[in-house]
Image (cartoon, rainbow, N blue to C red; front, side, top):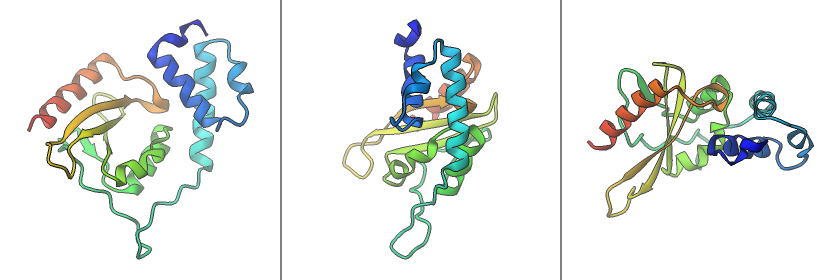
Length: 170
């Protein structure tokens, strides 16, 4: 695993560690290449979403807690995820662990968007300043991922970056 120093591979390694819940790292230690780590990741992610049994967070009245409004507008191609149910569904459809971020979304610290053009992607936006304070909100395009947390194409990143810059400068 000589390529572990590359950020995308290190991220893969950390995600697999998380999916293994740090209980038994033997499967990860047996991986001898990035592709074998990716295969392990994919199997673990499917198992995570199939067996998670995640229940939406409830408010004091026992109702599903509503998410705060998304900080950036969507467009014809990019749609904000506006409910816990949508985030749970996105995790299953994309074989990702976005459900782990629901508490941060409920606190207004992180938001998700999805797109099907130019490819199916989940977009994560981090609030880095402002939000209920005196300073204006500042946003960071934190993650853009294809199914199984794969990297998007360059064309897709260009499309997403263009949307993000336009939406965050309004």
